[in-house]
Image: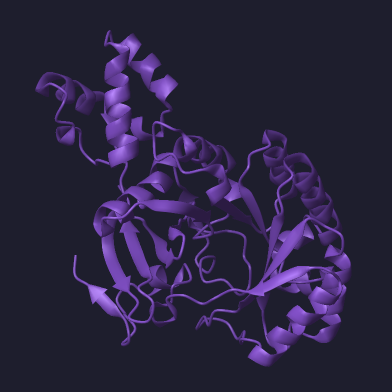
Length: 354
């Protein structure tokens, strides 16, 4: 990437300050901001209400980060779309667009890869290359919207990477994506997933945002969690739950706990009872997720009957739980797998040539 300033990561007030320093009127900043944040243009030449001289001036000093569609898979089962995006430096990331009754949701990546090392996750297998800028997270939404001709109403930060390991850029993204003169996606329609970086959960709680915090728990005790999630060695379940309770208290928002069901690992009746006791009385909901098959590990999905039984046990403790509906199963819609196998497409999926 070149040394020009990333203009797309600037807030409107920051852009106004930049333009004022350049001797340009404030209204020009709003024009440029809307081109970047609403329409998602990738070149200054597309800003047709600016003079050629101004476009050339901006081109000299700034760059517009983008997410170019490298590969696109469309599920023949439910229409879920999975993208492999190429960035300015040729690194690749993944995003998934899902259609629900309420509209379109996109799952975006926040890092190129991930360094958290969760044993069951494909995104972490090659480690973390770098953080994404706020503009690069936004560009995934713009690229998908422009490609599909839709408006995305919900965002989940659950793709490649650990969002709270890229805290400053993710917070800037949250400010930009919810800004009324930008994409204007309500904070209540945004979910942020974390494997449990306790200090950053506390920092996020202090901001009192109305986003949904999704915590990747995946185990009811330290013994199991230590074995599958290295982050637990630094911040154990007791510390994590304390931070989660504080987050719920500070924001009055229900926390979503992600619990990947792995046969013979964390799906026993004993685990269900332990999890029920852990979450009893808390402002929380549990998403039970059949583990995704990843070639490089040996984890297997729990039996459907056991998943339902697990949920029934949680309900006995007054803990709400649902089994996450699997979308895009024929295109391996969980993040990390397309990037690792960019030249192989499932036979039952439809690959769209770009």
